[in-house]
Length: 320
Image 1 (spheres, rainbow, N blue to C red):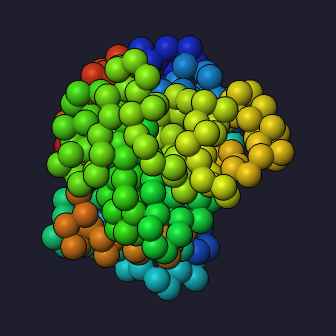
Image 2 (cartoon, one colour):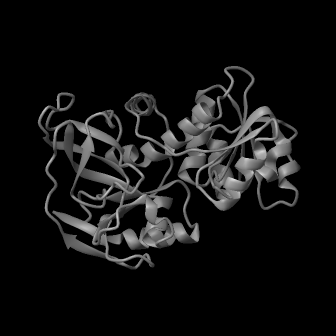
């Protein structure tokens, strides 16, 4: 099969078209012919060698976590799916993962995908999975968002996780404050944020008079210690990436009424099915652009420069 593979760590220029054996599904697995994927922060960090624990160590290495495509083959004992079903999801973030969606085919567990709604494109489905489930599991599960009178602050609303987090929080009935820069705030307004705050203004953290049940740091740009005075008693600061600063804040927060948490997204089928329902109802995930899979390095360069709003989707089916 065709694949765009990382040949070594250290640079986003280290990608090359490679021929690999097509994977064979085992018991309880399906093989997906990939139509679309998306560029994300994990792809950039893995390529640069910054988070080697997020992926297998064998080169050539295929990246790409999000996917949408069509079931092409099924393993023994697999009963949920049939050949021709359109499905979407994301591959696990961890060292046990030795494959990626920047390839013609991938293997997925039968219980870690959802049926793609017929009303949406593969591009939208691929753009949605990681972003929406990160926001959902962070805000709903770690944040334990109250059922009534909930207030959520979200950073990094130019990116897919932050902008999608607005939709997730609104779905849950929360009052949403969005923090970002100009293009991101324009998107936040369109997605229904109740308050928007320009992070480039001095004293931006004091612009809102609210106290928050959840501060969802989708940008992974801040610390609990920076926001702790803006959290209600029992409130949660949720970050999306590990760091030494987070570990320190996690320890110190044990002595305060609020807490610091990190979301590590999982492909639970119940959450993917809920997302599929929302997508079928018009849930909007912002797509910045669609690039052919052969130009993944260019997409990662745009990501590195911050020159995007929403997700940079990768066309795999037509991109080689």
